[in-house]
Amino acid sequence: MIIPKKSLGGTSEIIPAQLLPGTKNPSIVVFLKKNSVCLWNPRTKTNLAILEEINKFPKIITTIKISRIWSSKEILISTGLSCGKILIWKLNLINISIKFSWYVGHFNWINHVQISNRSSKILSGCSKGSMVLWDLTKNKGIFRKKVAHLGEIKGLQFLTYNKDKTSVIISYGTDNLLKIWDIRTGICIKIVEIGSETFLEIKIKKEKNLLLALTRYGNIIMFLITTPFNLKYLAKFQGKKSYNKSTL
Image (tube, rainbow, N blue to C red):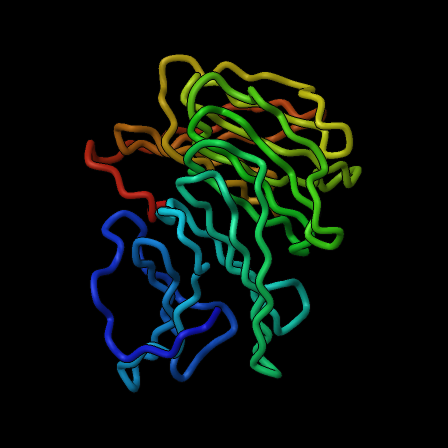
């Protein structure tokens, strides 16, 4: 549902605002309230729309991922909720239309969502360690891992290895394990023990097959992803004890 608004009101203190891909002059700002996504025009200083699901159940938006669909004027806004539901809005910037869909595959707080390169699949992970891969073209789940990690999932990434075009999923949890999953079967094909470092966030630089990890002490560790999906340590960059996720 889209509701025109003019005032900002109280915004999320947990999830920072970000720019809507594909918009400029002005760039539309996306920010969150407790249970809604707001699209704000900084030039006119007004909300263009508020995206929310109207029902009687209490919920909080716990995470958001925004991605421009490859080679198109469509944008996906994916949010995870405290009740375990995923809400997705597909925005078409040409005909100014919005399509809404929702998915239920978790029973706990969703703390991570990730969109594939061509925006046909979405990964979701929750605070209890379950992981689900969704097919957005068929509107259904591909596979669900009830216990992908012991504890909450901190990071999810899609990776296509450049040499043989093999696609895998990389996950990282508070159990300090990094796991690699076959995207077709959902089978875990490799487990990497991180050691004493605790990662807060991971990023994949696909063009160079690099994995960057931000630690709780503000350090950035760089790995090279080699076939068959091994991690080779490259470097460690010392940071401040107070971390900032935007570093990656």
